[in-house]
Length: 114
Length: 114
Image (tube, rainbow over all chains, first blue to last red; front, side, top):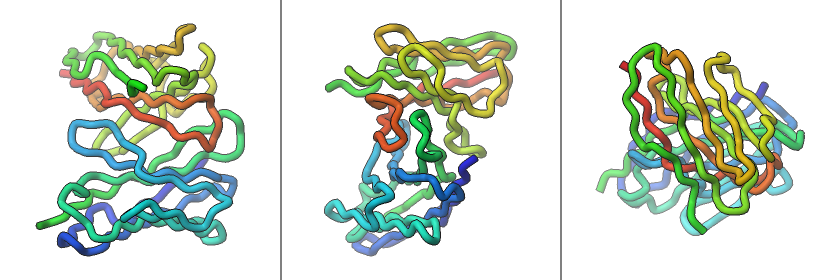
């Protein structure tokens, strides 16, 4: 089955700095790569996603890049703010079957210091 | 639209008991997936239901089961609880069960087994 590796497990930055979280996946048939943000006491919330026919996608301060050849994708957050502090998860779909589901990375705890 | 709702939010049980958790998907969504989240294992897929049928199942023992009703609401049941079943149980819904559809998560049910 699919395996998703996520690095780093923790990331501390100063407010205003950029943060980068990287993920690799094993199943070359995976075609959907969402990123979720989970705050304490809440369920994961989708922040951005990318599909395999796109190499990069941006939404304000958040961007995701996908390299299908190398089987890795990354989350970039610019101008970080204290409210960006949370656990971030990457995920990959298991393939092209009609009823595939998501495999998650272990998560990255991002701490943004004022 | 209202988001995914889960009840109860918190639950305390003792070893050997059984528990039933409930999930109401976003209106119009027919697919419901269940995940177990623990600090050590992260987010692990339990099963997915679509149109009252289990479509996918993760690598969990038979003590974990679920069902889906005609209104797409879903329940999961854990029998003969073990200490290791203590976790946050999350459900997620999406319109169908396509591999490229966004999954929207509920706030989760936190289960503590004593």
